[in-house]
Image 1 (tube, one colour):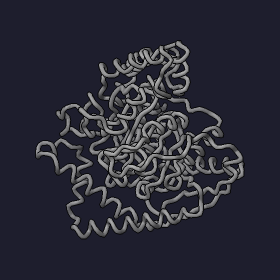
Image 2 (tube, one colour):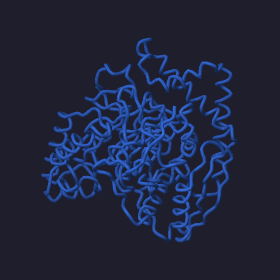
Image 3 (cartoon, helix red, strand yellow):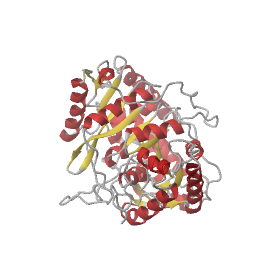
Image 4 (cartoon, rainbow, N blue to C red):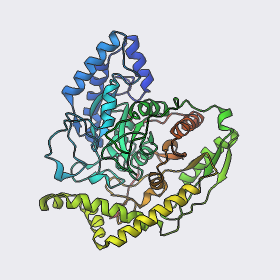
Length: 479
C-alpha cells in the first residue's frame, strides 16, 4: 500500500506539495503516479473514487510539469491532484448522479464551472467521487456505487452526499475535492471524515443548474487548502444565472487573537427539533467556545427559533425534489433506484399542490426567523451533526426521514449563508467537528476564524491513510 513513507506528501498540505514542485524535488507527474498507486491500494476498501481519467489526468500533469520546470506555474493548485463529485460535469468523465438508471449515459463534453476553474488553475482532475442516488441522502449508500465507507472506521458512514470526496480526502487519495451541498452535503462528510469543507455564500461558487439552496463547495484536509481551492472556484460564471459578482474582498488569512477578541459568537447547541446533540459533540463545541472566549470573544448563547414541527415542511420539499427525479426515469430505471430512498420519496405523492405551496411558505418563514436570530452576532458556532457516526449501510440516522439528522446544517442552505465544518475533537476513534457560519458574503470571516480555531486546536488529525476498523466496535443497523 502507498503510504506516507513511500510518498511523504500524501496527507500533507498543498503548500508542501507545490513547494516540492518549485524546488524540483518532484513533479506533478510523480504526484499523480503516487495518487494512482494509493488509490489502487485504498479505494477497494472505501469505494470513494469510481471513475478516473487516466489519459486526461496524465496529460494535465505533464503540462503542469513543464510549467513548473519553466518557472511559470499558474498558481497554488498547478499540478495538484483533485477530484470532483459525480454530480459536477467534467470533460472526459461520466455524470451519473449516484444512481443506477444513469449508468449508460455518455461522458461529459463540457465542464461545469467548478471543473473549468480547476483546469484553468492547472489542477489535475484525477476522477469523480461517489455519491448516493440523486444526492438526496446524507450517507454513502447508492444503487450504482454500493456502500462508501469511512476510512476512520470501515464500519461507519462517511456521510453524504459528497461521500466519496470526504472518504477519499481522509484517506489521502488526493489533496482537494469539490462537492455540492443542498442540506449539508459537503459539511456532513467533512465532519464524519475529519476534514474541512465550506458551503459558501449562495452564488459565490457558480454551479449548474442554478439553485437558490445548492452550492458547490471546496473540501480539503486543512483550512489553508480550502482557502486555496475556494479562491480558484469562486470566480464568476455567467452560465449560473444566480452567480454573484466577483468578490472584491481579499484573501482569508487566519485571524489574530486581537481580531478574535472583537467578535460576538453565537453558541447554538440545539435546533428545536430532531436528534439532540450527544455529550461528546457538546463537549467538542464547548471546547471550541472556550478557546474563543479565552481569546476575548464574547460567547452569546442562542436559542433556535424553530418549532418542533419545523422539519415537516423542509422534508416535504426534499420529498418532492427526490420524487421528481425518480419519476423522470423509465419504469425499468425506477425499479433500480435505491429502495429506501424510493420508499421515502413516494411520500410526496400524498401532497397536493397547495400542500407544497404551504410547505414553501413555511420554510420561507422559518428561514427568515432563523436568519433574524443571528442578527446580533458576527458568527454562529454549532455542531455539524448530533453524533459522530452511524453505520455505513444506513441511509441516515432516521431511515424513514433520511435527511432529518441534518438539522444543524440544512437551514444555512435556506438562508444562503457561508458555513464551514472543522474537525475539533474525537469520540471513540471518530472525528467530531464544529460548524462556523457567518452572514452572507462574509465567507472570508468564516474562513479566517476557522483558520484561527484550527491553529488553537493544537494537533493535526491522524488521518487514516491506511483505512482502519475501530477495534471492538459493532454497529446495530436499523431500517
